Image (cartoon, rainbow, N blue to C red; front, side, top):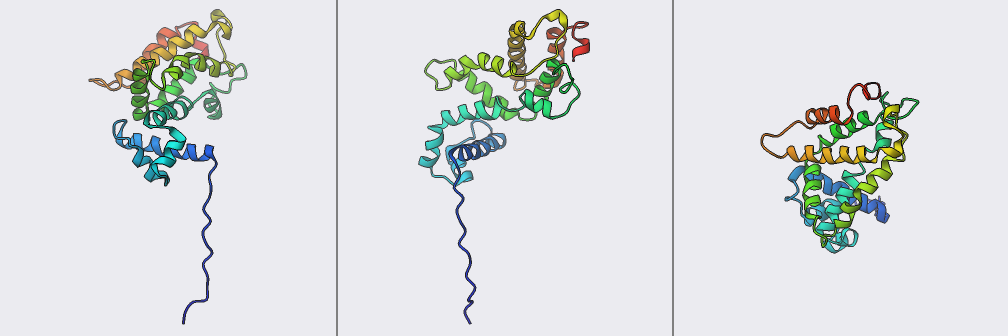
Length: 214
């Protein structure tokens, strides 16, 4: 006897453009972590999110556009100062402000867990030195973007170093040093990022000035 029970049709959930883009970046980041920068293909991303290649290209333009979005959204916007504050770490929740050295240690520690995203950032950054590269403007403006982002946080600084407005050179030196340390991660012999950063911290945040502000 045929069943009289009718199955309710499954409704397809329509994602907003922002939700779809986030889904694409999540899948691409996972593929980069699994296969590496050179193993990433647009078809792999299409298969992971259920889009055709024309549908995917509507959101990312091309592979270079996808890689740029990965750097902007998945590399640069991870582990920002607000994320550090949300951990509840005493160095992040001090009533006088956040410890800059402690935040940078937090950033290095978490970056070390995703070496393929670091590789992606380095490769794309080197390629973007060409003015014709689609990510050239982004990397050119990155120092301003980092300074603006960090300036949204109240930092606890030693009186000897002056107010936050005077710290841009220090911030840029920290980011440049961090980029350099990350390059060493992929050379022989490889280095431990946290160990190497600890050496830079001694120079960038010297004792005794910074001892009570770490």
